[in-house]
Image (tube, rainbow, N blue to C red; front, side, top):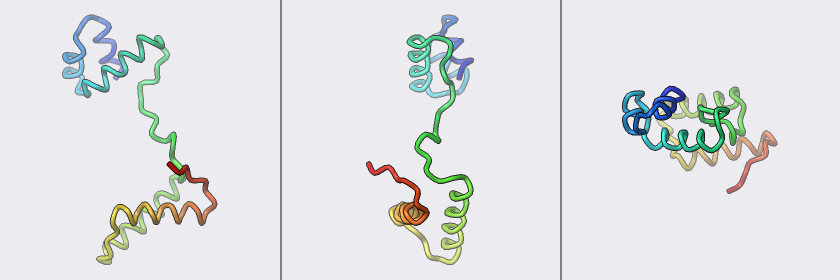
Length: 99
């Protein structure tokens, strides 16, 4: 992503740089704008774990349970999966942000 932003700073258009580096035009536009506002100290990778409530081990346990139940022909809908995750969080006394 940083290489694509540097291409834009060197004079290429955002669309050309996005195509050359294989990134989304909108994402590149957002990072170019951010770099212009904040300078060179811009974080170039997403921060997916900012709202993560389970540890890696807990996520693996939940995923394994869902896979086993699927193999036993007891499919779980996406809504049921979210309910199960909420129940797991409340039973383990993990604070859950309610939106």
